[in-house]
Image (cartoon, rainbow, N blue to C red):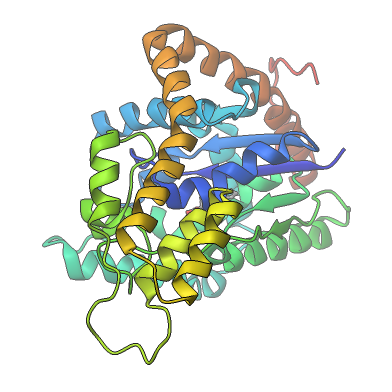
Length: 339
Ligand code: TRP
């Protein structure tokens, strides 16, 4: 059975863009593959951050993923498996400075720091971020990595590293992971449909998956539809976005009926918005219930995360044992490896 791996940063507040774009697909993949999903707290340290918030968000992200249907035994917290950083070091010796300098995410994020913060500190961690990501993937010999298009370059780097490693050490050891691009809907900000739905733009620009229902309805109600700019008889970006939300919410019948009304020139946007809001609420209600249950058992959930991470760690330790052997490092004694 093929191995799937993907990871998410503990950002604090998942929104419908994350759900429809990634998490929903992760849940489905669990039916057909061996899956591992990591919460990458080490990666979250590459940008300016607050320690207490990081720890809180890491556990919260795990709870949120489980509330959406990710199985507890498939979830790990990256830093509870410190072998990720050990492999990162080793792989960094198989990665060139030039390759990392070409990463567009590094260029974008360092520019963002320079523009938005008074302090223009750019960490080496931000630079070597893609090597840690390669370690996340290669340590579990993942065949497929479900990610968004924005991660294509990082995945290509992971493959270049695995190919180079195998060539230099003359052993077909690491697999060459392939990205798995799901059909990701382009969800736009409701407040400004010229932009992508994203948390970094601010509160107005995304709908939190676990937010208050009244807030959700209000955001949908005040979504920008026809901005007043001439659209030459074409559907405006805002209206298209509302229809897109209906489509990804699996409301085909409503979608078709409202689309016919639109084409006939009789659609009242208020009606469309009401149906969209209902559809979103319907999706999240069961998740919210599950989440509340997990939150009330926080202690057990944390314990469970420690255990799932410890179990998954055994695979990582096995890889490191083999990698240390291949790369000329001494054997590390007293490691419990049962896989
Ligand atoms: N860089 C990814 C992102 O920003 C997160 C990530 C870290 C990741 N390690 C990974 C994704 C390993 C897939 C596999 O979305």
